[in-house]
Image (tube, rainbow, N blue to C red):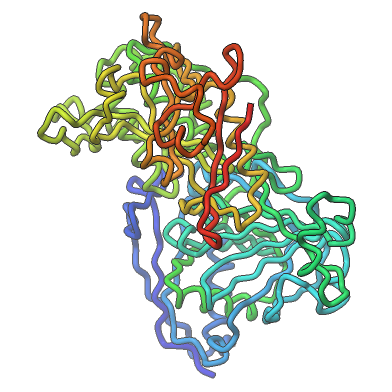
Length: 552
C-alpha cells in the first residue's frame, strides 16, 4: 500500500505565536494563526501506509514541540477516505487506565482537578457489543475496578462506565452535540495515549447497584418485576450528582474530559477516522498535564462600586475552573482591583463571560484587557449589541440556570414583566430556570430523586451575591410548566420582602389544593414562623401528570 504523495497538515498557533497567549475558538472557526504544510515522503521511505506515516508525523511533532517549548502548537492532519470496515461497527469500546476531569488554562497546559484510581487493562480496542453496558465479555469485563468508554457512532453519544466493585458502578453519558465544537485533542506520550474532550454541557451521572443489593430498599418491590424477570441480578441505574469521589461542585466546574489509555496506534486511528466522519475536529498536541492545587480558601471578592459589577463578577465565576484557575493569579487580581472603580466594569465582565462561553480555551486576562481597550476606543464592548425593546412593559431581569451539577449566572435579559415584578421593581428579582444537564426538562422517568434533592437544598439556602440575599418567592403559571421560579432580595424598605410580597398578592392560607395555589403564584404561611415552604416538581412524560413534593 502506497502513501499518498502529499499529506496536508494544519499547524495552529495563537496570534502572536507565543506560549503565553491562548488558542481561541469561536464556533468552528479557529481565531488563531494557521500554517498549512504539505509533506511528501521520499521514495525510499519504509513507511507503507498513510496511518503509519501520520503516526510517525504526530510522534515527531510531539517530540519537537516538547524540546522547543512549543506545546501551545496544535497539529491537524487532513482527513482521508476511510475503508468500509471502519463504517461497519456501530460503536467502539476502549478500556481505560484512568479518567480525569479538569480544564485547559492554555493550549499547552492541562489542569486536572479530579482523577480516578488507576485501572489495569490489556491493550484492547474492540467493537462494542450490543449490550455494552453489561460488560459480559471476557474476564476483564467481569472484574472490579474496570474503566471503559463506549463511542456510539449510531446514536452519537459517549458513555463512560466505571465498575468500582461487584455491586457498585458509575456511569456518565454525554451526547456528541454536548461536546464543545466536537473537538478531540490527542496526545501520544510513549505507549500512553491521552484523549481530551471539551464539554459544552456536563454529562449525566448515574449510579448503578446490583438488584441483589436492593432487597431491603423500600422501592425494591416496585422494580423487582423488571429487575429480576429472568432470574439474573441486573444493574439498577439511578441519577446522581457526584461521580465516585468527585463531588458535585468539582464535577460541575470542569469542562474537559481526559481519557488515559494504552492502545495500538493502528486501532486508535480507526476510531479517530470514524469520529472525523461525525464532524469531529481532531488535533494532536503535547500539553503539560498537571494536578491543580487544592485550596480551601474562599476566592477573593473585590469591592465593586455597583451591584451590576458584583453580579457580572458572580456570573463569570460560575463558569468554573475555566475561569477560576486563571483568576486566582496575582496578575489578574491586581488588574481586576485596578478596574474596580470603572463605572462600566459590568459590561466588561459580561463581555468576558460571553467569550468564555464561546471559546474552548480563553485567557481571561488578555480578553479583559481587549474589552477595556475596545471600550475606551469605541464606547462599547463586544457584547453591547442588545438594545431595549420599545414599550414600558419590558423589564430587564437577571437570570440563573440550575442543573443537577451546575449553578450558572446569566446576564440580564429584556422580557415582559408580570404585575408583581413591575410593581416592586425588577432590580431585586432573579428569574431561575431548572434544567437537566442537556437543558431538557427533568423527567421523573429517569429516577431523579438525588438531583431534585440537590436543587432543593440549594434553593433552601439563600443565594448571596455581594450584599444581597436572594430568597425563594414562588412561580407563575408559565414557570410551573417550564420548571422555573422567582427569587427576590429584600432591600430593607417596608413591603419589599418575600413575606410582604406574598401577603400583597392575597391570602391563600386556606387553600389545600396545591396545584391551585401554585397557579396563583403563592405558597406561604403553611407553616408557623419564617420557615421556607418550598415545592419541587417534575413532569412525568409517560403518565402525563404532575408530581409534587412539599418540603419544609
